[in-house]
Image 1: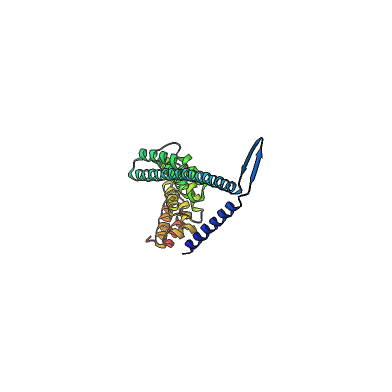
Image 2: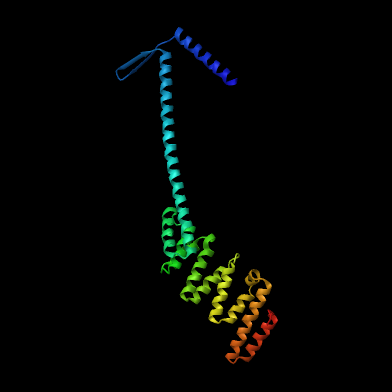
Length: 260
């Protein structure tokens, strides 16, 4: 109802203005560089109105074209992202299936579509390790630049070091991961495996005595591990002829419990 009233008022106003200009058209004279235009005020207003409408139409067409180009670009970008996510899924699926070559190809495709974001770099690092590529450490190093992917990079580097028999490197990366507030269980397990494999029973016991081990291992498991490490240390001391050391280690094994 309100719209109808407004429409009627506008039509009435237009009729009044038209009648007014018909009764008193007036004269407008425009002279420019030898040209002269004589017309009435009403016709001049109509011409100006048409010019304004033409400008508005051009602006509207430009906005539509620009919006269409933007929508096309956005749609293209979304399709690219969707293809990249699909390549990531294929790559991780290939990794878990043990197909390192397919994972490497998928990682390359994902990086081309999604650039070097953390997910593509992680896939590339794992594919490189799966295939035993020489640049596996270099790729994993890029994950250390972001707080959110640092642990993933440390894990890749530590496991690469284990695979190459680099005990020192594996220990360094695992200890760096354990130094974080959100120290992961994998780092503690890997560090213990490294020390046990190397026969460093004192170092293994020191790791188990730390706060991280108390936070990550249940009390019963921690006691059992300490007892076994202390027992192994006592046996090593006996082989080396260190009776006092063996006695101290044996006492630690008994104190730890764990069924020893």
